[in-house]
Length: 321
Image (tube, rainbow, N blue to C red; front, top):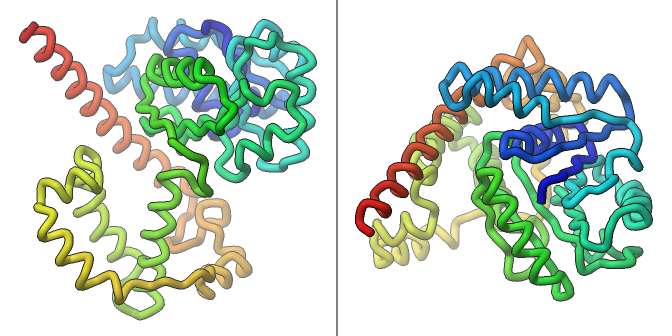
């Protein structure tokens, strides 16, 4: 697949477009407003510049990637001759369904249509589709140009070649794709994340720790370990007899609430939305620009290390053959 269309130029759309272009694909990115496209181009340029500064790309790599991207506000123009369409428009079902109707009336039957949604199940997205078997979910994580994982979600009637082609494309652009065996609300990552957030919020409500202390504890423990050993492998390395004892001792005391904590509802009602309003669990004075820059800088360092380790492992395997 050489021709990729990205619908939506926001945080997820521009990051995905950058990745596809870095991998040598011809990319068309579509937004409704020219200003959104200009902002996306600036974000991609700045992101690539940082990668050049960290010696993850050359100046030539950056220029070639940017040259592969074209920008348009015309949906029909954007999807012409597309092999793969990455939809990342706002999470409004009717808007998505209307967009898919236009796509299916324009593109080849072989075109794969993917959505970045984490809100709607695939069966809802394809309720009006002529060829639902060529739809798939590719759930990227913010910032998509840096976070390696992509969750691929299919249903019973999704064609095998659609799943395989999507998996191969994700690998080609440098992602670590996982294919869910069945569709479930929240997929893998958000289910685990919400379970952990429920307990973190519970600890705050009980007065056990502050938001800052919880962050420090997690960054210095699970955040440190899980970058290279996921939760299952970590337990293998610790010993499952230890895991069984730990789970048995703690599980009964964990929060099992099904309600959003009242303090979080109050924060949202009081316009404490995080970086958008310069106040959330922390206070900001620049709409979070410094925090985002610091986060992305750390993510790039980790991504660089992961890529170096992957290359070293390839070399070791080659040398043993």
